[in-house]
Image (cartoon, rainbow, N blue to C red):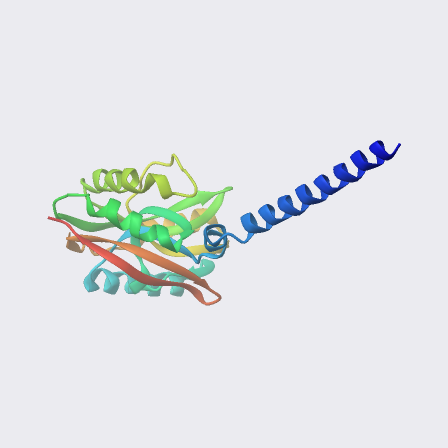
Length: 224
């Protein structure tokens, strides 16, 4: 009987030590600096794009005035200076991964190319106009976009198989009075075919604010 009591006491003591050790190990794992740093690291919403010269923004401002006067739809007009051509939206990533993306983009070598503004168009979603945009015409954009997409693929948060469409968003539409009338108007608006050189692309950060997105340039990459 005494022997059994002794064994039982020893077993309880061993279990107590094990539980104490296990809790300590779990506590260490949870509060490990590496785990905590990864969990608490700042997220940055980033994308790769091409921004336009001033003469393009001047034409976009003219387009906005014409559309506002027609008043056929409601939504958010993109500030001309914020209009850009997205090569790849990456998403929200830990801040420490920005340097890795930078190194991947630095490996891209591509020549400068000429582009020009095309006509207005619209992306249709669920039978109505969702986005109004202006075409950006350049036969080399798709190749450049493909190089960028391959370079940043490991960090892209949401994979999409949509074909690349070179465009600059003019307006994000919330309400349309008559879709057919809006589409007809877009065809009738005369666009000055502004020509310009593409000599760089940029890695950008987007901060979503109540009044709209704010953009900050992280790094600029010159084309050859």
